[in-house]
Image 1 (tube, helix red, strand yellow):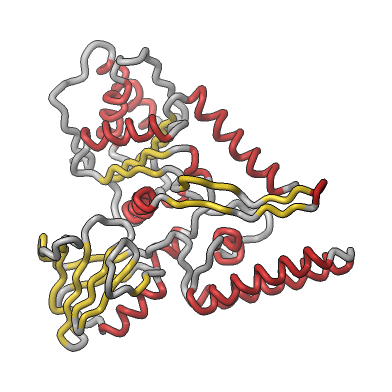
Image 2 (tube, rainbow, N blue to C red):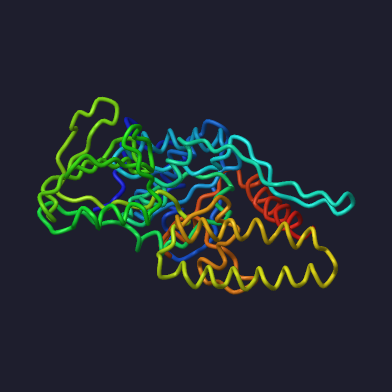
Amino acid sequence: MSLFKLQSDYEPKGDQPEAIKQLVASLRAGNRDQTLLGVTGSGKTFTMANVIQQCDRPTLIISHNKTLAAQLYSEFKAFFPEAAVEYFVSYYDYYQPEAYVPSSDTFIEKDSSINEEIERLRISTTSSLVSRRDVIVVASVSCIYGLGSPEEFTAMRIPLRRGEAYGRHKLLEGLVDNIYERNDIELKPGRFRVRGDVVDIMPAYLEHGLRVEFFGDEVEALSEFDPLTGEVLRKLDQFDLYPANQYVTSRGKLTPAISAIKAELDERVAFFEKHEQFLEAQRVRMRTNYDLEMLQEMGFCSGIENYSRHLTARKPGDRPFCLIDFFPKDFLLMIDESHATVSQVGGMSNGDRARKTT
């Protein structure tokens, strides 16, 4: 039985049944590349929904802008109400990358404004991908940019089971390691509060809160509640809580990563001083040492993606993890408006590389 249960008031008509049949047969035969052609309004989205249902595989759909991605997300959400249909686009309302202008010796620091709702949807995407197979992700080309390790993201989850031993102190430590922030006044995504033996958590990827009630070192009750009214929506027997950030790193891997960052810092400072670039040496020393202090104390820092190579123990030149690494090997990739999307992927990759090699 298919994991993807397609719900629609309509059946495939016209050329759609034959297109669905040929696409599914070609995919099952192991052919990598297929093309679906059709004029606007011919039902290409419905056709692909039927292909997803029959192939029964996690699917990534890439569109070349946020507006089209949102439209596709809405349509697939209606087709598959029981599946995890996710939306993954850039979460920046405003973004100015860090850059250096050699002609004027000007360093432009990175500045950005993050949309909290889109950040929640992005974390929801990775949480769904590591926990279930009936997942459809509609993404913009931002899915090619770096994320943390899917193995670390999965390993850092906190498994909570009603009736099992899991100490309150252990839970609080785990929340901090997963980059959740304690705030007993305002409960927002990525925060938790403690009231005696009751811990209220606002998962960074959900709209509802999680309440964990302890009796000694035993999880006495788990429930989902409305963060605005406090009303309990349903009782739970189990819940896997995933990190509040995709760059989460376990303490065991953080220590060698910090050592590697320090070694690279010493190397770059020595390089600048050798070439009598003392301002640059001081600038990189101050910035990096501040970030290292934050990593040691909090396990996270602003701009942590700059250190992703060390945090994931990659070699120089290795590509970073991205959203695609969170998918299983047998996933389907669908590219909407491929004449625009494919060239945009190449252009964004080359543009990012050009900025970093200035």
